[in-house]
Amino acid sequence: MERKVRVRFAPSPTGPLHIGGVRTALYNYLFARQHGGDLIFRIEDTDSTRFVPGAEEYIIEAFKWLGIKFDEGVSFGGEHGPYRQSERRDIYKQYVKQLLDADKAYIAFDTPEELDAKRAEIENFQYDASTRMQMRNSLTLSKEEVDSLIAEGHQYVVRFKIEPGRDVHVDDIIRGDVNINSSVLDDKVLYKSADQLPTYHLANIVDDHLMEVTHVIRGEEWLPSAPLHVLLYEAFGWADTMPRFAHLPLLLKPVGNGKLSKRDGDKLGFPVFPLEWHDPKSGEMSSGYREQGYLPQAVVNFLALLGWNPGNDQEVMTLDEMVQLFDLSKCSKAGARFDYIKAQWFNHQYLLAQDAIDWTPAFDKILRDNGIESTPEREAQVVDMMKLKVIEYVDKEGNKKKRNISFVSDLWPLTKFFFVAPETYDKEDKFVRKNWKEDTSDMMRQLVAQLETIDDFSVEGQKAVVDPWAETTGARPWNAWRVALVGTGQGPDMYELSAFLGKDETIRRINNAINSL
Ligand code: GLU
Image (cartoon, rainbow, N blue to C red; front, side, top):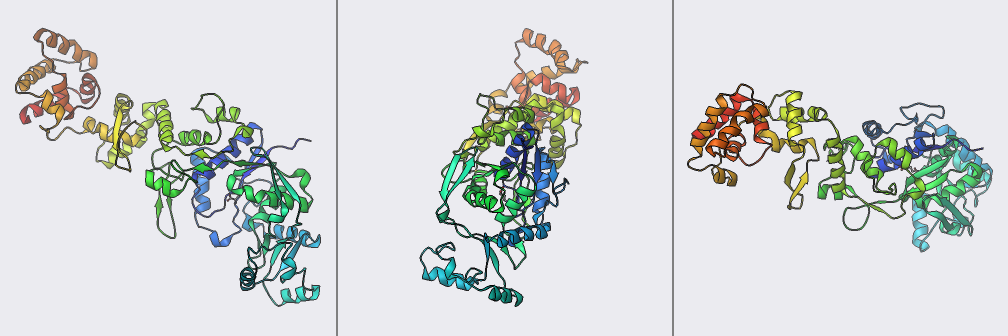
């Protein structure tokens, strides 16, 4: 019988969720939706030394923001709980016992010092079939010795007894048949008496089995663990229901070799985390896509295409379209280069697709931070006039660059004059020098006289008066008019700007320019 598709995203709460982890979760989400299956959110917190407070909450908040919904798991509930591994100790103990009873695992008492001594003695020491009979474990000690060591309170670990010389096949949806020989594997620790917790490997396999996971979709960094996982499924007698694997391509640095790191982000000025993160220990702050002004749909769209594409040229896609088009088997094996300029491009696309009014909560906040009070309606007018402008900026390497407006915050330097009149006029400004000559004040006085007569100060209302006047007198007031209202050569159409400012403010600014220039 076909099993219902069930996939899981299983982060360890060791810090903020890396953007690569977000992509893994997204691919799981797309796959689950596409197959009418379930997506589980499991917290793998068996390594207490790496636990970071707040990380779990952070991850949940990040997915909420991104619109990636889980069907069950930590904070979502469900029938297969608890979904936090630290709450499943007793379950794992049973399965550790099962392996011990079946002679597929053994108890080892070697202390760290003893292990170090062995490493010094044997080059490239590995705890495996070739060495295990030289060690202090339940294979070399008598049952009585083992029992009394445990009774005396000696700490131990349980190790997986890997049979050497076997071909282990991992059937990977993306990579095909990955084949390794079991002799290269070591007898992995599955359980530690010290904290009474299993290691990642055991907990991961037991939970995937109990939670009826059908597909394990995860980052390439887990591929080396997969053969061990295959052997564990066999050892438990679960080979029939073993999930299918899909190991996703690595996310690579924007330039150079290697995997994308926080350092790359810091250097080039882009976040590698979905949300801002304040490290509770170091106090260090890491920037997030949300706080940088990205729209969640843009982030999701951009991430979806890092390692997969729909096979046509389509780039902008809704989540529903992605669910339709996504194909796990068409994911690339090769690493996907992280292109943050492309991320900005996506944000630009998604911003433009919004109504101007949807820009205003963020825009209003920026205005307020700059001491300006306005209304959503007026702010939306400004957005419509300015959203297609290009901004100039200096990148982290000091290069002057231009780009489309990609964030609401890009608007502010371009739109200040809508809300604040130029205080002084810079006579050295190129545009001012070129367009405000000796006789300009005269022309502007005439313009003011014309504007005074207008009742309807809309674009059409102004044109109806100003255009015939300009025509008959040959006056060309527009650039000087811009100087008066803006202070330099920026901004939208002059009539639109004047209509926005209104008759009084427009005339006031022109008079001010006449007096100071
Ligand atoms: N806890 C692992 C992680 O942090 C899960 C790996 C897996 O999906 O098997 O990514």
